[in-house]
Image (tube, rainbow, N blue to C red; front, side, top):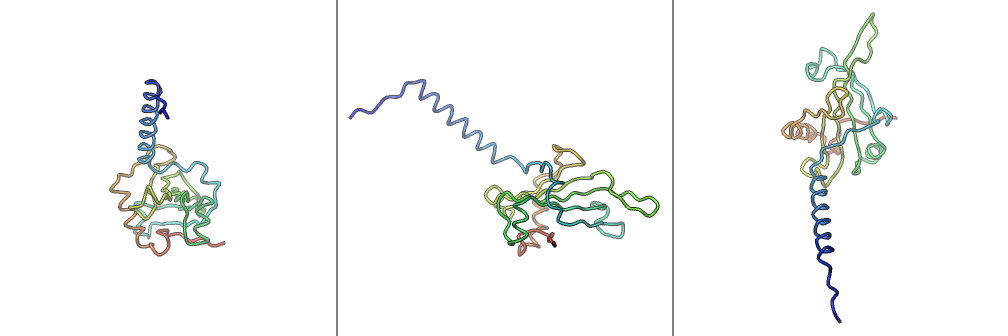
Amino acid sequence: MRTPRLHPRSTLLAVALGLLYAVQVGADATVGVPYPAGFRRWTHVRTMLVGPQSSFFETSGGIHHIYANDKAMEGYSTGVFPDGAVLVFDLLAVKEKDGVTAEGARQRIDVMFRDSARFSASGGWGFERFSGDSQTDRPLTEEHRKLCFTCHEQRKDHAFVFSTYHQ
């Protein structure tokens, strides 16, 4: 039986497509945590106010809202957060007038994105921060991301997640 010979152009095309695929896969592996578009329509997990009496006020003072996508809600129910789970920490400034406290401008959003393969070194979670209302301004360095995980390691018994959900 004779083995069919490939036309040189077919071989070149196959090699080019293979290289393109390898470049795309390599690029995808380095993509950071995506911006969580529409997160304010997700499940609201909880809110807290960090006031001037807190040692965290200088860096994180304001109103904190936490949102979870459907997969993250599975994690709150089962204790195991599946890949694709996203948690958003939305930090807003505080405005007060005549004894009424309200949300001010967004300071930042912090995002935890579950992908156990890509983020295996940090418990399966990727960490990102977006400044203000920007969907592209990512001020965290790799060193900052490691610090995020170092802090979240305290909650290893709770899948590295600080927040809890109460219905």
